[in-house]
Amino acid sequence: MAYQALYRVWRSQRFDDVIGQQAITQTLKNAITQNQISHAYLFTGPRGTGKTSAAKILAKAVNCPNSQDGEPCNECEICRSITEGTQEDVVEIDAASNNGVEEIRQLRERANYAPTQAQYKVYIIDEVHMLSTGAFNALLKTLEEPKKNVVFILATTEPHKIPATIISRTQRFDFKRIATKDIVEHLAYILEKSEIDFADEALNVIAQAAEGGMRDSLSILDQAISFSNGTITLQDALEVTGSLTYDMMDRFITACKQKNTADCLQLLDEMLASGKEARRLLENLLVYCRDLLIYQKAPQLLAEKAQHFTETFKQSATEISAQQIYDWIYILNETQNEIRFTTSPRIYLEVAVVKLAEETTSESTPADSFSSTDSQEIAQLKEQVTELQKEVSQLKKQSEQTQPQAQVQTQQNKEKKPAATQYRVPKKRVFKVLQEATKKELANVKDVWEDLLASLSVTQKAMLRASQPKAASPNGLVIAFDYEIICKKAANDQDFILAVQNNISRMISGYAPDLVYITNESWPVLRQEFLSGQDEPAEESEFAEAEETENEETDEKKEDLVVSKAQDLFGELATIKED
Ligand SMILES: [Zn+2]
Image (cartoon, rainbow, N blue to C red):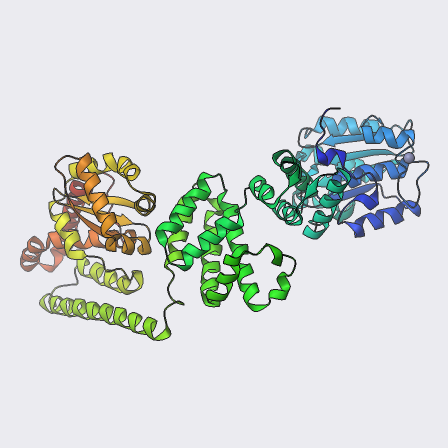
């Protein structure tokens, strides 16, 4: 006999076999025994929760001459023909492939004839939300003039796409996601019947991966059976579902705990290389962290899982502070949201990994963290004071003029600064590069950028991947990082700086630039400030001689100068932001 997928072999044939939907199946059984059959049903719910199975059982139960307590006998000719799909009075339509008006019109015509063999003509329309508007209207007409002995069963995963006029004419049943426990029980039952050995925890992993769908659970179980060597182990289930193994998570969380960023990134690379999917990976780590927390606070809640916890896990649970775990959960959760709509989750994962390994707030003693934030704040305040003093003296100098545009911009830039980053952007060094920057030099760097990435180690690559070259001079290169945390790390990592420098000079002969790291956020501000400053001498003399009425014109001229200078430096794409 040819191999048959588990979900076909084990499709429920009786209401009592439908897993996890007792309220619904009981109501349907009662309706049948009391002979109160509605002419239209709507079955809604996530995929694989038993809608179509229940529809076919209902079709049998209303027609089976031997039906008992609302259940079909599954043995009479009618029951068997419905199971096999050969009963012409029970029509199954997949709206996903038949969404035309014509099909529904034909259906209406056919529905006018009395059933030939069975007692009821039953139309099962699967994925009914896929019907076209015209088809819905035709269906509505049919439902508006209910025929005796005709039953419609509409099934859908997306009830919100069904017109209210249709819904109001049906008896609605909402199928729920099946509880993990119920799925596990059913899988265990099937495996016992099939005489296949298994580890309990393997079934848990499968049920969780299927997210409450029985059909998906059975498909995964199918894969696990063919993957395994006779016994379905936890390892098999983890492999088949693309979940992280406990060993992987242990190693990863240990590396995070030790703040070993390089190891963390290396492990991430391994996980992705072995085909782990980004979403599942984050989910697994979240569950692991949650388990750590619960194990700390209320281990009795994890009694079922307890036998699978490794020594490393238990040790981590005692060593890592709750606050640290909260921080990790926050980062993982945030990343989960970020990767929802991206096609390249890798970069987000890498940033998350750096954050996980760097998060230091809770590990340092309160006194330490206090003094370090203190000194940082003081440094920032000092910088602000110096800048404000400069500004005041400039303002005094220009007090007789109407306020020039450049000044307003500088002020706005200043306001932004404290909030922006903790990384201190080396403004002087940036300006030095900009002073001598050329388009050609930048183009050279951009040309070799991909090769440069390829030449670096995993950790270094991950850091540089979140950055772009912004300006290049014969002696300097400004690199802007998407994330402040990586910028800071890059600026303090001598190996990284050397590797980038060496590889660049290997790729562009004779080019050994001083690397200047900035955050992407600071770039527009720096550029604007530099460009405004460039024209200051000319601007001052012009202002000094200009009449007030000519100020506007001067501003325009100045803007033109700024734009052309910008184009010289950064190429055609350069735009001057008005912020
Ligand atoms: Zn029967």
